[in-house]
Image 1: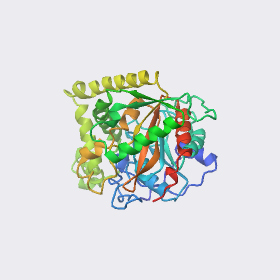
Image 2: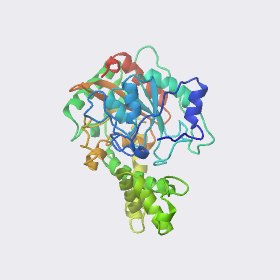
Image 3: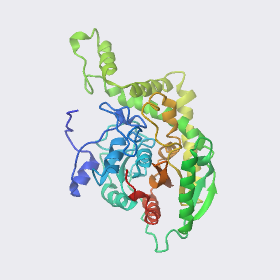
Length: 387
């Protein structure tokens, strides 16, 4: 609780240079593992639209700080939807850039091939302003890859733009109210001049399984360093019977249930006898998912659909049923698997709870993505609704 970082992350350095005023750090699921901000080491963060419900996660504190008007923007990280999902559930704009566009130097790693720093803002136009500040190359991050494509919309709205709507986003399990609002938003995009094209991404059905193999595998590797000696809490030596005993006690005392669950899942899929059956196969399917997105983006400019299949659940509903919590990520994880940019934009209220429209673009088409989101927002007032 009293930790003060010995150095700034690159994104913080860039914001300081731009004159940002920092108000504080926000709450999140422990090690960014969770979809509800219930798995925090401190407290559960409440959704300002209904304090009995979760705000989403893992970056729930950032989303709530913005939704409650405590700040004008906030940072988060998105490994499988941890910016877009809480943005959808709090009525804010959550932007995940193309993998590598925002430096991750100074960010604690969860799953290194999926993690991406992103932003929470009130508008897509504000997200674009932050993009100009944070989208800088960084030699300290080996994944830093700033090749974004410039894009400026002509005055005629979305004329000439093709927006694909994957049928797989509207299958079983999608809440009726969410489906209605997202389809209304897609109709609005059409009214603004875009051509709406039905598309199919059959491998989206495999994305959640792929994610929950690859992500825990990388978690188990990244969190190996928290041994209580160099990193993490150290159990007093005199009470440990051996070095191994010290490891077990130090990790066992401080790591939460969800973190332990993911470490164990990851250790399992990487273990001898299971590596080829799970991890290696998941990597192959990941490549196929990327190729399927590449094919679709040769036909359309943007993809549109829901952010989550359900509305925010009440406290305990997800943490007591991890599978239900994992399923809330079904529509966001494909974007991370393929390294694409994605944004959640408010598109209305369902039973007085915010709903997000998810827009997805091809790699490095971040400016096109945020421009489309901005055109949509300027034609609606949903982002002006407050809890």
